[in-house]
Length: 307
Image (cartoon, rainbow, N blue to C red; front, side, top):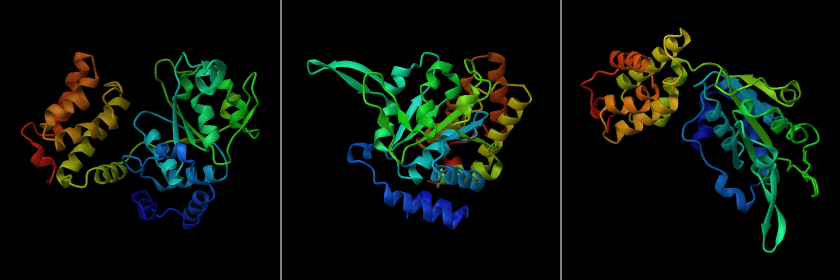
């Protein structure tokens, strides 16, 4: 049994859901050409209720929209779900210039003739993959509108000039969206209606402990608690409007821990992973002071990791 399934047991995810997951994997083998996209996530998602809701929705054939503020684990959850279902992952990042051809595909000249070059949504549909629609609220409405027939009960992709593409039975889409990012917009009602929506809870001390322990088994308990306190302190200051969310970066903190494990001094590693994410000098000083209150300046890698 792999690490993620053991994590499901430790979180007491319903046995019925675990059995249904095994049956889903058995009924939907991954095509050989897509097996390189079935990848274990770097860290487990911690949160039984959210996991159970997500797994149940996907088993029922629904698509998911994960909404919430920064650093609530939306992409971590999406990666974990794809691994639990053993599906190839297709990451589609939305931005203001995303159009239908970048999603579905377009004509290209190949081998002396015009052929259809499949886009990531089409590839995902044909392979029974999990498409992660990242920052879907950054796309223009007309770009997202081309997904309507793909995401609803029709489960088809209409490509002008070609036969329509029917989605593989195992295909699912998981969209993510952050609140308040520059360039974001309200999702239209027609698009939202094609998803089940999970409002992601903020990371708690218990969840952070599980993430850090899972990602860094050699992390000392004192250091783990210090890094948890650091993240929660930054979160509180961001909520109070004292700093922006630029330095509230779980990925950055995990990257800093990897640098520390490699031998970089904790202070320098956290400068790179958190403090320097803010380009406002005053804000950077505030974040630096928060770091110093939790991570002593004299600490070395030996104070953070056992090995």
